[in-house]
Length: 267
Image (cartoon, rainbow, N blue to C red; front, side, top):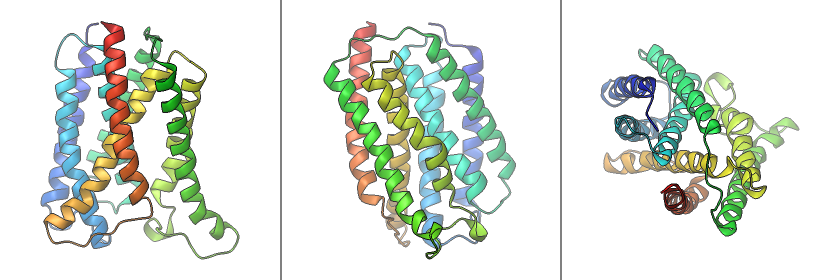
């Protein structure tokens, strides 16, 4: 199929905004003021990964002929961008590139929705093995339940009069990861898992998008500790460190399996 010109334009604009935001985060004197030092290193590690994502978005959108798998990879990277910069918008103190975050989130979000609309209108092969579909479906459901349980184990005691949850957002506001995961991301991942188990035609392509988003996000999460170690900074691993590392490996393997399956079926 032919790649829409607006896809390339959105990719360029998102990449330029990521370049500006990441350059500010890596080079400014105090880009993430009032945040713990370990959180600053984590944000800067994520800035490095986001630069690679910006290159990936443009690379995937450049060819005039768009393959289905390249569209899925592009959407997966956009999902990472939308999630990550939503946290920058509501989870860090306002800085000089706040408006860049606004443009970035608006354009990436619109491009993601348009891409998902196009994905839904396409014909997708349904001959992937039952083992792959069911295995991925259960894995996504388990991931959603696991992380929902992890966050609720922190939030429920506070709801019944316990100590405030850790971590907290700025000024005692809800931690943005709690909001995004419990309201949007985890229900969406669980829904994709159910679609795979029920044999829905959009289950496979949406699973690839979700898995690429998971892989990219977890690479970014681990880039923070790696960046801190490389620069002799503090390393602060949260309770989700072990599960994210395991899921990074499993999700990467599943992406290769689905990529091979969809490529073979489309050829």
